[in-house]
Length: 574
Image (cartoon, rainbow, N blue to C red; front, side, top):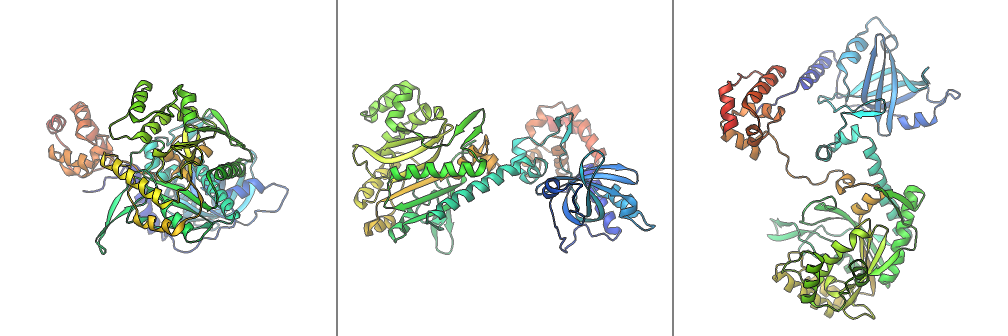
């Protein structure tokens, strides 16, 4: 199928060829040396100093104002925007003014990347500006950017559609530069956490992503096949069991920033691929880990904002220690008025029904409690809060509570209604662990697709002997959402997982259009006109579709015969 270019795309391709005909390489190979940034110039330049008189800078052209023999433009680099001034006679000191009159004024477009050399001055309007003496084209852009316009403090034509922003993150980063700040803060957050852990003397490690047995969490895995070994492998759902093997091997503290994968639905809080930091420290327990986690998150918040209190949505969240603590049963009783601590599975099902919490026959006691807590307690926990002492059925890898029968030594931190971390006094009794795995197998037989599987090699490891250990898992993406005041997990991931994009090509929608008798050469034109599926044609009058297609054919200068109005009517009725 032939490409269909918009009028702007055609003009840019024509400009590209004209540059080549003039002997200008629009994609040069050699290095362009940069000695400063827009941020450095704007922050440090003043008329009273002699700095920035030999500037070499590169960036993307974001605006042009042609004023006869002189012009202003705005370039954007990694750190921000800078106004630049160009004078025809200085840019073209000889008789030949082609580079200014033709190249700069007509062939260089918004979105092109250029290298500039010159000196900095302040205009009569008080704006710090680069006076350009040399300009070099570094990259010709042949697809126009969505241009965001601002007037009287109002923004027009902003690139705000979430789906397009996530699919075309490269455009999002160009036209919405504030998005970069989110990812800079995320990187600073991770670096602060890493520095804290390394400062405590713990070892950063790497463990397998492809695993013969998935484990360490209650989740459904992605499955793949290794051809050479002829064996099934799974993308890891957690790195817990491998990190514990390292504790068995004699390391006192290990941690990993891991990409984990769970074959689950997507939402504002879930992405199938996510980042998790897991830490295991020998000879510690969950009480010690609670204090450790508080200390670490308080430090990270101060590193990012020089404060423990930050704004999240319309609320202020304070990470200053100490945080509030509830046991799981206390939290449920506090928020529902129901004491479930002595209830069996049948009683829990009735309690859940009374509370309006949906359950199904695959759920065991632990899952039912988890559903009640998730629906009736989590949304009310805005300030960081420890939830401790979980029922044993909910925690197959946690150690039994030292004094409370039927519970385990586990905590989660809930903040702004969502889980930030999970931690145990890790189960190191191999006989107890084997029985817990067997209980998970039974839940799997009942239909629980997230039930854990039995890992014999892990059991062998703890049979060798694992010291008392505290473990911690932190959802890095969730923490980044809170610390950057982002509403969706997709906002803190450069390239979140997306559903397949609908198009007018030979996707399923395109095949549908072809079956309706629409010629293949018209599919991209229909897509450009906004008719990417058969249903969109059926919902529109055939006369409008006909007029739209004829208009696009003329505008795009397409060398294909126009359809008749009768043909278009058949397409719309197909």
